[in-house]
Length: 153
Image (cartoon, rainbow, N blue to C red; front, side, top):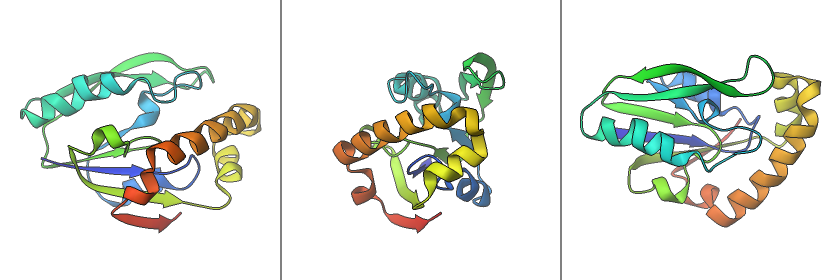
């Protein structure tokens, strides 16, 4: 099985790019919350990646953002596939390197404003905090520098 990570800052266009690939996509937005931007990783690994690598279906409960505050929502079944796209902030983290077939970095200079347009003005304060987290995360993880492909969103 091949795993493609589509990573980069929020609002850069990762979801749009991932949708063009025509492959099954698991978004990190299904796991992350404002308070937990990256520590959810074991849920993805144990619930999705490891079962798929064994040729078995993966399962996880996605975060439901519809009320503005994320809560655990419906279970998602991920059928075995030849290629899976994991899309979102931290999807290409160094800890995933052993599974990744390709790491795509998507960036856009106005990603904060793009994220605010996507999520609404009420999300601006959370997005500003998220952007601060991202800068530190990506600087330490060096995600962009490890990318196989770098795209402008």
